[in-house]
Length: 470
Image 1: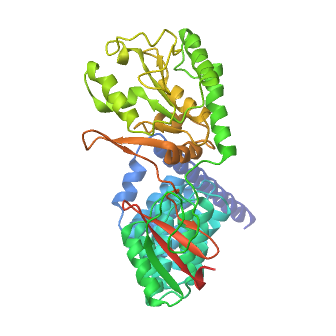
Image 2: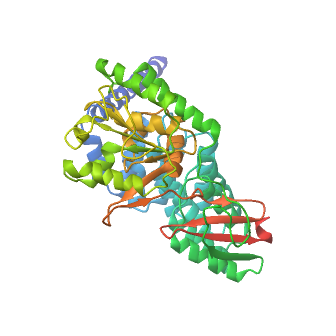
Image 3: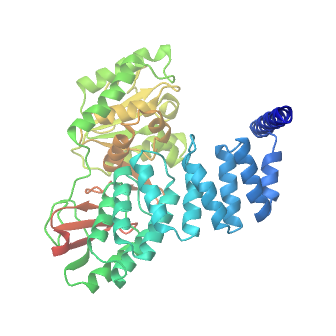
């Protein structure tokens, strides 16, 4: 009897060892086949029916092959089969997975909303934000839309705070739904719309016309709010509430930070576009700015002449016409390359190295001619920044490639500076028309008594004021 019991126990232990060994081999094979690009595992998940998917999930869970991509694929299939029980089984495993990415969270959010678990989706979005994990903007937008439609006021308010902390803009559809639900009374509290305006004030954007129309309907419903469409003049004072809006000029400290960065690049010639023979050229520009500056307007001559697309003999004439359209009291610096003006000019106004010998065609206009391979964009930006916060840059170049090379903290500064100090040429008319930047920064601006919203493409503002704004 004891011998039989011992044999039975030994046999059971042998079977268990073989099962564990089989589990390890299967898990290792499945993991290797998936990671090495073999899509057999992926193909099995795609072809599985609802019943087969359940068994496949259990077997992969036993084998330990539930990596992030596999979980994402299983979640997709469970949503496709509308299998609520399987989705939440996979979701419970995904919550405790070691490696998370934004695509996995997006699928989870999609499934929670698909199965009407709105509050669970809200809690997940808020917990991800608290843990400083990435959630795609589209998924956050879907959660906000669902919470808005269901009238969950607290969730909408918390999600709007997430938008504010992340400095992300709100989509048009979400804003329209939010304003519409507050207007109809499905969502209680005008503070939600004011919080929405705070979201827009954190980003540099103009408000869509449809949102403006919805806000006017909301103001008409309540007697506490008035919305008036106004035009802001150059003084920056609203004619409706007499408040002074934020100007379109970069603050002094931020301007100095941006100027010093470009000056360091020119002084050290650390950028790859600089060459050895440009030392004299850079020194010539620095001396010109020291002895002849500051300037009121810096002209990116190469970009302007490229936009005009005129023959060589007409370039100087058109450049002169553009400069003459400004106030004659202003001081100009025109930067360009040698091949643009060599054949067009017969006067000896320039020498090599870009140092101007005398003024140009009128008093207060100076020319700086760089070499054909010189970094003229850096010259133009630096000259305009060195001329002070009030100086303008005339160019149609958006300088996107240079913005991409800047340190992260300087990218928004350059964008703000361009928004307020860059003049552009409108080529739709002949002769070209100058487009000056707005005197007021075209962003949502709020105060203790009113909000001002720039209307997209209309050069108008919506003045929102009333007791609810306080």
